Amino acid sequence: MTRRDLVVASLASLVTLAAVAGARVAAAPDVMRSTVFDWKDMKVSATKTGDVRRIVARPTATLDELEMHVTTLKAGEAAHAPHQHPDEELMIVLQGTLEAFNDGATKRIGAGSAIFQASNEMHGVKNAGTDSASYYVIRWKSPGTQK
Image (cartoon, rainbow, N blue to C red):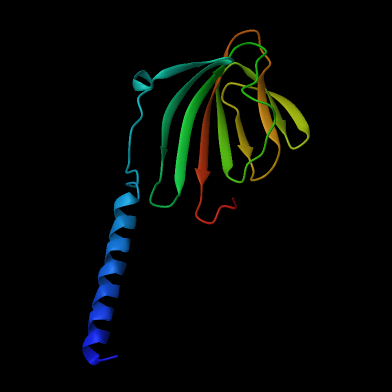
């Protein structure tokens, strides 16, 4: 192999690496900057148990993803069966009465209450009232969150 061959191979490698790096940067979504989410601008989507307002699901400067939505449940309904996931979650009750299930214990809570769901612990909520119940869900995926 000649010196010229080494130079050509090195340049080809550098061009390939630059192209791959550029493609990764181009494919990465923009991180969310400070933002205001106005209630009246949130689109409402019907579900079989009530409705949902999707607010955002984007990376931030410190999180792989920040996901927020508002769920409204009809009386007696649960959004889904108790479950668990590796990311953590904060739920804030906007209106109504919820029955919150957290890792084996159940508690009734009302408007203004908050629930923290730790990583990989069973949890779920059910509308325990006679009217609709609404709550904010704020979930985040930190760098290094177990899959």
